[in-house]
Image (cartoon, rainbow, N blue to C red; front, side, top):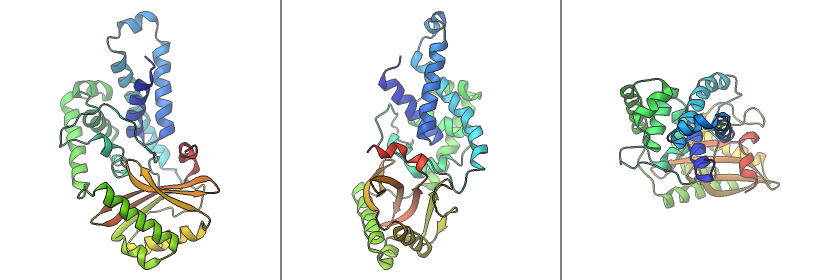
Length: 288
């Protein structure tokens, strides 16, 4: 035990369940600590160390999800999952009606997962993304396999209801690039032209930098918000790059990443913006 592949798999699971890079890493470390605390006899009795670690890590996440909801009630402004720059490979099942690996890391799904109960979230992610049997999930969440199947089915229906028509990656990138150009040019008309009428922008600053503390809805209001941000950061440069598996935006100022934005697109227009400016959530972007 302890190779990079096993650690990466646990980190993949924990990030999808918790939406936090640091918390996911803490879960991996705690899981390995518990493994090493076992005596030799106990370790020999475990037929599949990988399955044991997966179950332990998932249980830690499951317990963490309950307490996280309480902590987020006191969070300043909107809370968003940590944006990630790229996604390493992981084992995944691939029936067409299930959540796929690339979709499971996208900001839209991670935000939707936040509205689900911990049990729904665990059942969906472990079964649909990582192929874990319901019997194993049941031991983790303390439910019957049938109950876990129903939890995953309920979560899957909510995801299906929230899905929009697929946009090709090239088209997605083109729209994001047009959005960035309009912001940089301060062109209100060009900006409004790439925003859906019901677009919503959500900013997560944790109260550590100035930002809108509530989601901003509507093309006119979002356009004004984005131009205000561009004016505030006149020296910033913007780059279209992969954010949670899709083209998004990274803003640099004085050589540091100051904002990372996930962008959702439908019908040729920007429909959602998730803007993370909390510096604590951007530390893993700085080295890049």
